[in-house]
Length: 505
Image (cartoon, rainbow, N blue to C red; front, side, top):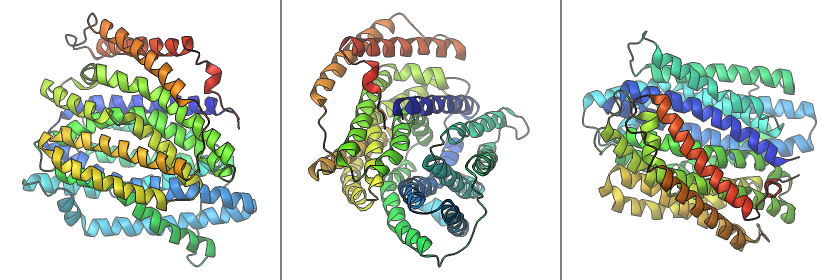
C-alpha cells in the first residue's frame, strides 16, 4: 500500500474542508466582528469542544481503533459486529450521562470556566449557547465512533468529506435573514450539520461495510467491562491533556472584549496547517503502527516516514505564517465588522501560536506511536509534567494578555514533543537509522530560498488597499504558491526526490 497516495488524498480533502471552514469564518467575522457576543459563543463552544476532544480524541481515537483492530483480528466478523453494537450502547449511556450532568450544572460550569466575566448579560448568553450546544457532545461522539470504524476498515472517503456539510450549513445559516443574524444561528448550524453528517456515516457503514449500528446495552459483557475500565485512564489522560485549554479559557475571561475571538481566529489558521499534516498523518499511520508494534524495525520505519514528512511540510507552513501573517488575516477576515485593530491583535496571536506548529504536528504523530502500543499511561505522565511547567510559564506571560496565552500553547507543544521523542528513543521503542542531520541541512537551504523569494515579492504585491475579497485571496495564493514552489524546487535540487516521500506497507 502506498501511504503517500493515501496521505495526499486525506490531506487534499482536509484542505477542501478547511477552505469551507475559512469561508464560514470570513462571513462570521464580517457579520459579527470580534466582540463580547462572539466571545460568548466561542467560549461556550470551547467548553463543548473540551468534552468532544476527551471522547473523540480520547476514547475513540486512542482506545477504540487499536481495540477494534485486535478484536477484528482475533474474532469472527459476526462477533466483531456485535462488539461494535455493544460499544454503541455504551456510548449512548456515557454521552447521555455527560449531557444531563452538564445541563444540571450548566451555570456552575460556565461560571467556573469564565470567572472573569462581570457582565450578567455575558454570563447568561454564554450559558444559553452552552445549553443549546449540549446535544453536539452526543452527535460529535457518535461521528467519532463511526470515523474510528472507517479507519479500522481502511475507508477514509466519507469521514473525510462529510465535515464539509457542517461548514456549508454554517455558511447558509449566517447568510440567511430568518434569524436577523443572531448569534444563535451558529450553534444551530453545528447541530443540524452534525446530524446530517452522522446519518450519512450510519448509512455508509451499513451499505459498504455491512455493519448495523443498532445499539446493544450489555454492561456485563467481559469485553465491554474491559473497555470501560480502559476508558477511565484515557478520559483522565484526555482531561489532563486539555487542562491547558481549560486554564487558558479561565484566564482569557479576565481579558478585554474580543480577546477570545482573536485567539479563535488565529487558532483556526493554525488548525488548518496542523490538520492537513498532523491529523492526516497520525490518522493514517495509526492502523499501520498498531499492526507492527511488535516489529521494532517496521514500526520505526513507519515513524521515520511520518516524522520526515511532518518536518518537511510543516517548516514551509511555519515560514508562510511568520512572513505572511498580516496578509493572511487581512485576506480572510478584514471585512465588515472586523476592524484593523482586530487584524493586528489576531496577527500577534497567530505569530505566537505558530512557534509551536512543527512540534504540534510531530506530537500528533508520536501520540499515534504510543496509542498503537496501547500505552496511554506514559503520554499521561509526560503531559502532566509538560502542563505543570507550561502553566508556570503561562502565569508569567499573562501580562502579555492574549498573546501570552497563545505563546504558552506553543511552549507546551514544544516541551511535550521533546518529552515524547526522548522517551521513545531512550526506551528503544523507536530506533531510527535515518540521516536527520542531512535532512536538516537541505531543509535549511530550501527555507532560506523560500524566505528570500517571499520577502522580495511582498515589497511589490500589496493587498491592504483592496476591499475585494477575491483580489486579496488571489494575491495571497500567489505569494503562498510562489513560496512553496521555491521551497519544493530547492528540495529537489538538494536531492530530495518524490520517491523519498513514498512508503509501501
